[in-house]
Figure 1: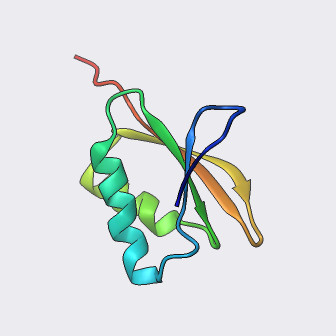
Figure 2: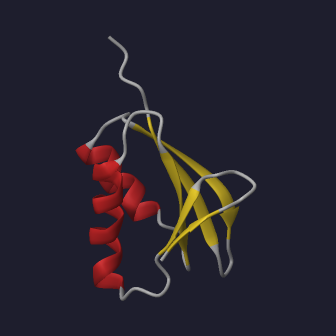
Length: 86
């Protein structure tokens, strides 16, 4: 499910309705579609820290990761693709 917050114009991707096996695939599909400067908010039912580690391993320093809400039942993280520095 994708929702855009009217306050921030940042798309929220709520993966709580997906089975766990589909969450990582959906996350990396969205990350792969981001352009430099784009961002989205991931909404999950637990700390998505393993995704952070996988993202850093595959794309070191290419994305920012900012917690907006840290549980206990809802976790929100804003993920943004960084501009490359020449």
